[in-house]
Image (cartoon, rainbow, N blue to C red):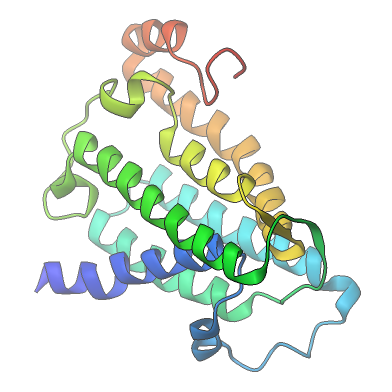
Length: 218
């Protein structure tokens, strides 16, 4: 029963959420989750609403992780709140740049999503799939191999690059990118403080040789 719950309420919603992101926050299937709020927020307030929506989504996840919530419950909440973001997101008009037509952007987004899945799968494999999905109680350990040998937060880097590298930067996508950056400026330091307290000397050695996100920059 537990695997079914994780797949239906955790993995599938999360997959749809990231596919939606890499399609520029524009996906016809997203209309199925809308709850009739598209016209209740004035256009001028929509960017701020979207920023608030995603940051609330992100900080909720961080708070649940910090208190050590049961991983199965965490996965279900993560999946359902991801669908809530899709449903409550207010579409924005405008583009910052476009290199190619709409079809090119769609194909690029699909390929980008597949690459994201591969990297994300690699990260989960290194972390331990059973622990990540809540099938087994996690064993405290500092993961420094695989993608973690290149940067300390490969999941965050995977999302940032997915949002930034695109032939078409829509206003929706840029708003999502800004929201992720705002969230990470708070979430990463908080996470690193916790890891430093938990792993002490091992964490200090790891941070000295491994960049936070981009090699040679952060």
